[in-house]
Image (cartoon, rainbow over all chains, first blue to last red):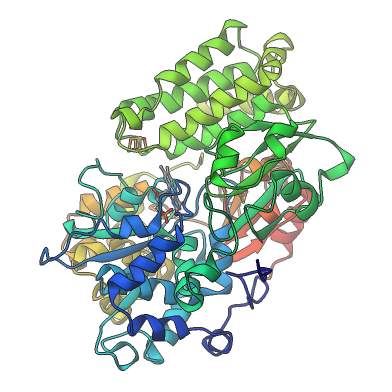
Length: 451
Length: 175
Ligand SMILES: Cc1cc2nc3c(=O)[nH]c(=O)nc-3n(C[C@H](O)[C@H](O)[C@H](O)COP(=O)(O)O)c2cc1C
Ligand code: SF4
Ligand code: FES
């Protein structure tokens, strides 16, 4: 097997703060894939992506090529591509690397994907909190249009394709694929009931394919270098490379591009991110962004390759590859409360088991955190979590509430002692350390309200 | 989550709507509308342009004009504005500061940064400094977890903050 050259997606990428220009991208082999792709039929491009087994990088890992084949043929309606750059999952900052540093890779990928699925228009949705990224993408699109890679006659082929950047404005739920569609159509980011699936009825009730930024950025590499070359990193379960973000209690918070089959979670934390800060020990790690189960510091959890399958077997999910590391001093009640505040705040409110359920979870954890908890509340929290969400069973429209349940159940499962200690000790140590300030604030607000 | 005191709607309308006239913005807005098969779809990008051009918030007059321009009900525009945390229907300071409060930042001291800013400026998170210079909010994960704890000041990003450096950054920017 030939050694894989690293990095792949970020090859030739300038450091953060600098954007790769069109000239730099072209000098790096940029838009060669498009040239090749234009000489192929759309089905040939789809077949290549299918043959690689590329799985969606937005979290769920659905095979991209298969999704593309769901677009119905000859409906007489336009087809759209929507690229998901909402990246609002706590702990995730990988798509930003592509958007800000190698935006042309994403533009070229979007054009090729449009070609494959029969679309002439792509919308790239980028969260409003990424104004620099939005500008980088706008500039790249302008450059590509001026150079004839976009527009009414792509590279003289007579084929028309356009890519537009659509800025979000602060709402996690717009990362959910149908919430994103609602947002692109100019509405509140309300997710929609499936079926119909977006591939059949998406933007303006036309067939729409939704893929994550990193998923689409892989397409030019596949078309340019071929299936075998692309598959030389990763394994059958998780082919290709993965961009991973590491944050929390590590010496060197960073993002890296890894071969998922050859890199373990332990290596990510201890080699790439420099180990646990302040000479402390590892307590817990959330491997895939805040929505996946937390893992304890155990060899069977850490000494596994960072593939979808292996992390799942270890009891969590590789998800969107946002590794959040917690050291031995972390109070897990405090960490869970932080996440529950997030999910409750971000629930769009359409479904009762989510709108109310995420609120209950936050309230219950808060009660334990603030020293008002009873011992039976720990089990109560665990049981209540079972009644929240349920998108798989059709109880909610989307998986947001389920994303709050997974951390809750796993935090209790692995770190019950922290919850019981908070009940016994009058609250979380974090609460106790701030109690005087919290009480002072309450008092001054009560006085303010009386005026 | 913000605890800003909201201005009474009747009072809001009396505030001046500063910035360019809507007609002056059309040159920028028309090409954006053309990107979509339906006018209504341009609502988010249009609100962004108008908010940026007009003192960082959406005055009742702006809301009326946007609704008319895109031929959508005004209630729809209001509904959209209130859904997204980055659209403001109330006046804000000259710059909006967002301090990340989510897990990776909390693990590295975000709470202490927020406490220091509250104490230094004498406001609660979500409030505006007395000189009208900054509105200081908390935000959810800004996608800058590798520089936690962090904050943004409009387009600027500041990371690896300490309580002292956060205060110094805000005080040290050109007035
Ligand atoms: C609450 C919620 C938030 C999500 N946020 C994102 C996101 O920010 N970015 C993303 O690519 N996918 C996100 N997803 C997953 C998308 O719904 C969708 O599966 C993905 O964009 C499909 O692209 P892929 O197949 O290329 O991964 C989210 C899902 C849920 C339920
Ligand atoms: S599950 Fe929650 S976020 Fe998803 S649509 Fe229902 S209320 Fe909204
Ligand atoms: S948690 Fe603060 S930037 Fe991600």
